[in-house]
Image (cartoon, rainbow, N blue to C red; front, side):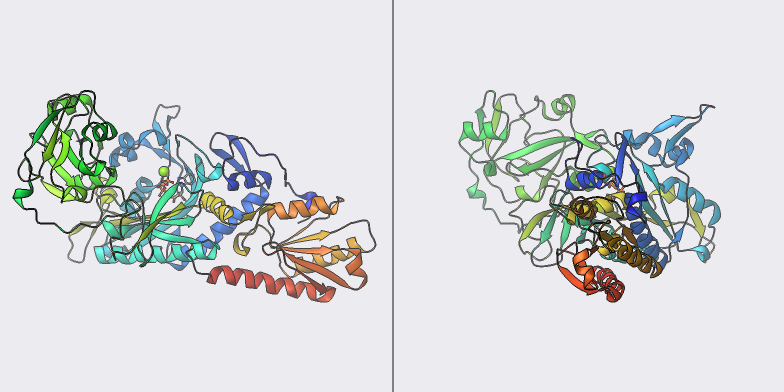
Length: 580
Ligand code: ATP
Ligand code: MG
């Protein structure tokens, strides 16, 4: 492509809402433009990169025997009512009506549509397993769209859905997608790692997020320094401590203390001259309309997702004042486990505590020297808290550390959640009707591009890894009006085109500085610089964007040198170790 003919509006201006570098660079490099909040147009350069990601995704999905379909974006309310999500999905689901006042939504995801398709056409075990995928636009009315195409409202996603006859086969399908995702992100040239993620009621092994390592990432994860354990912060487990045998003679006499206007942990510590580690916090939750108390040591945080999963609740929130009053007999701020009128569960952090402080279930009172076993009993101890720095790896006991990342993909075992509500069944070998076991697998295409830029940029702009580069080479004649420079550039351009190489020819009559700046900004991996001085001795210069390294080549060798560099670049990225 000739630069002079391209729609490539580069610039120095960055909109004030562009907080992260990828968003800034995508605007400055003329890849995207905002139409309205969370809704972007891809310009030619940006769209080429999108197509590169899609191509890699397609190849790997096809290799894993998934088949491509294309499902509608506009979906009827009836299907969502059948699955129960019309009510549940919340405000991210954009609902609207047609001229006949029939209700619809814009697909934020496609479980309903795909399950409907499959239930009508798959009847027996002989037609299973199947895996269907699409690359399509999703709409989610995100509360706070931000970071450009990283968290927007209209975005391209690859979503795949697997249907299996039994658990064993569903595990194989999951494993194939897990492997395909590793291939995809490795081939994109990204530093990433799969981490365990929350899988609701399904259980541990069946949800992984693929995280691109980036400081600017919205997600926190926990990584073990010793073994391969890595988990999303929401999901990261804490190990069950050894139970310490407590002698009853250690128990001190329980005391009720008048603590006027003392509610928070800090206030209790100040007032009673104790540390947060001496306090048991009692949180009252509303789980599907019923109250329950969760106990946790004063210096720890409850992880609501763990609580929700542990209780098997559909909905979990902190109880309102009315529910607190009913359960504790006191206003908010004085809850404690002694004589409480609700079920009690405790985090492991409470298991070995003795003579601790809690609320007294009485306004302006706390209890000192409370002990489990004597003063109250706990229904169960469980892992209900957020992991912290000092925790050890739940698998090997090694040290852990926190890192940040961008979730670019998610593989998830759905089980029979949708096949049950939407009645997707098949007849097994014995003619018995059974529910299909499903999995779903998403990749954010635009988010992957943005994540790639987060990892690959410098002060001058984007530094594309070869596999996602919109073009592999840019030809930059230093001065198009000097000597044979322009003719030589034309010749190399046509040779590269003939060799099937993706090349931009910067044929603009601009100062060299302007052209170099643009080439750096848009991040093309290889640059052929054609200047009169080298040309008189039959040479041109090849500059590598990433390393800044330059090398002189005779004219007749430049095309093959470029070919070698491109092949190397593609192979290197594909072979590079993934995590880091
Ligand atoms: P997040 O927690 O970031 O909102 P999610 O869990 O809602 O993501 P999924 O429903 O698993 O995401 O969607 C699959 C993939 O789609 C994600 O891994 C991500 O790459 C992409 N994605 C999700 N929401 C957005 C968005 N608002 N903008 C761009 N890409 C998105
Ligand atoms: Mg989301």
